Image (cartoon, rainbow, N blue to C red; front, side, top):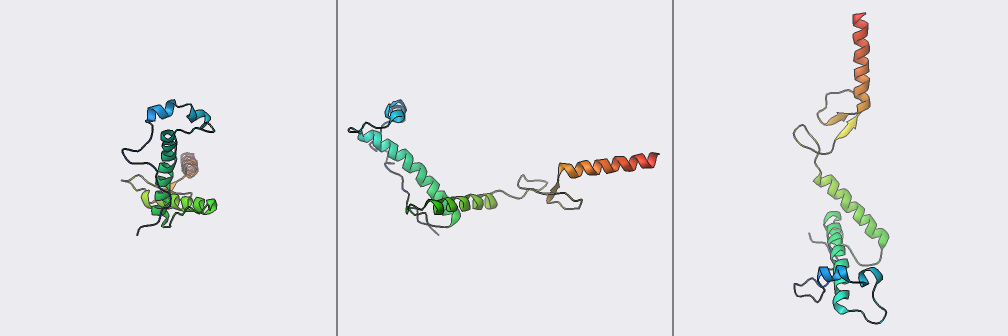
Length: 141
């Protein structure tokens, strides 16, 4: 299913009326902002393209991962929640569970068992070592 993304990239055509990246980085306006009365169109287009391109990419990620439309309705709380949902979805679907042959997410445990999917904590390992040392001392004495 295709979800709606209201955030569109601006001036992305190969022949777009924008300054080169080099000229943009050298522009005094990058540090000071535009002069009050004379905004060079090609420089403004560059600024709009940079801001709109990244927002479009992030909005597309949100729409794809969260399964919701991303609307330009000014609702920051909703957009933040959608971003969080998209990130959680990415983590839960794209990061596999760890195994002996595959890197991934591991659940820790602090009890001894025979699971191939749980990893013991350092504290549990130390407790087992200490217990074995004590048992060995008792057997030798």
